[in-house]
Image (tube, rainbow, N blue to C red):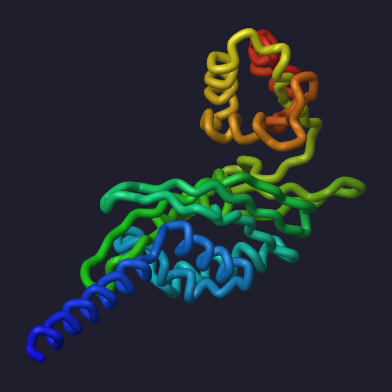
Length: 247
């Protein structure tokens, strides 16, 4: 009986241990939950997902007020924070930073605003508090926004408004844009082309590779990579000099 009881106890401990392991949170799950709160504009609960270091820089009230004032000021509507959680999650080491790509689409009084972002998560805390937390900063609101900066909206007759920060830097501006893309079959050295384009467009090579490996892509197709101002002629000329690049 004693041996049977011991075996039963060991089996029970193993089951409990395995159950505990399976419940360990992943950065992908954490960020997916965060984006759901963001779409609901539940800024108070979003704050709970921020890293301890971030919380030293901004309080819960300041965090919520920052979002609320900016979103109200530019009349944000139809907010859509898009993050596609992978079916198979990778294993991550403790202390490792994990970067997850996502997009933000919104309607504002100045028109539609669409932007690509990258969230950084890190595993911190001890015991029950150990989890994946977001290394948040002002750029999560708008990519170019920095701490302490304010956003205003300028409107003009017959054209859409423009969103600028307090230094008059454009966050969502009018103007002609060019679509920079790649035609796969025209690349002489794919690795070199992707590397050069990534550097000039301030993107990662992984981001470009994902666009080039989409299911619809064929060798002779133009694959859109990123839009940029048509006024930036010098940069466009340099990009066009790269084999495979088209505008």
